[in-house]
Image 1: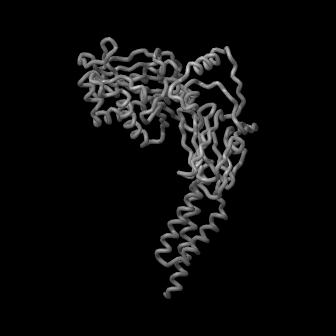
Image 2: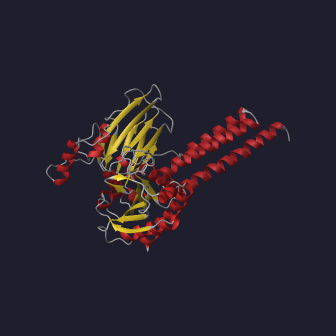
Image 3: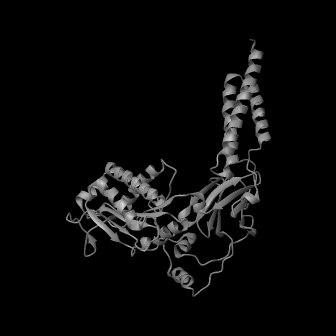
Length: 436
């Protein structure tokens, strides 16, 4: 066969192969029931990937003429099937946000979810200085449209501090919100899902604009786009996930928690290290959605920990801590006091798995993996995070930092990995019993 015939035959074969792959991807996207809004976008990304890979391979084999021919074929396929997202107001969630585009092309925006403060950051790599403002960021709730500066509201003190960039909660904001909660003062509130908009321009160093949107409650966001706009659909957590647990890693940042007798080991560091081990395990599965109150050495107030669990309508809440022994309020090394204890919220009733049962499963997991002394299951609704959560909740004190044996276990990564595995199994069992 002559070279020209070979080339012609190869082009035909390649076209048929690429067309088959593209159609296969589109059918896969269409019939996957996971996230309806994302299916067409996913298909578009896959077709683009096929085009890019096939083009590179063709250039290597035969030269740019064939690559150009193949690229045109892919473009024709893409145009015929129209896999890009098409906005349909009837199919959007009840609440959503629309942000204009100022440049062509896709994937110029990235969404980051800071759920502990009900805030999404949208980093947009397009536009010009002053392109984005509160007037062109449209918010929808049903048939109601909102634009411009959101309504001024009296917010929980930790939210007020977060939005103002203050490290501490002010007495003034605490008093104002207490008046709202007690009914002494009425809160005005329209249906706008956004309560604060902050726009930061950084064109000189990164070429990006950061749009920070803070919401009236916690939503699960999904970023979509067409040629004209970016869309953020807002789902309720329970519409997005069937099983949810909040794992609270105690203390953090300015709050060190307790510490060892020599003050070299801080509780905030031990809870974070253990939490990261748990995250590695949960990341291997997708049946249970896990929210951690922190995954770094960040300061998190008590209230947002409980608020997060309540707004998510989580099935379970688990707070991770370590203990100490003190004399006159100062931790000292004392080996007679050691072991694992767990507290639970007895006020929660009417659930298949009670707080006490949940606590029992977690305590047994820690004891079986570490061999620590069982100090018992204690009613603990007086603890803030337990007393303010609306689901089965427990607070585990894995061991005493002031006891040599417990401290050695807590600092042994292999033993703590084993503990995390057993705790994971206990959480799975709690969810299984919840469904029986």
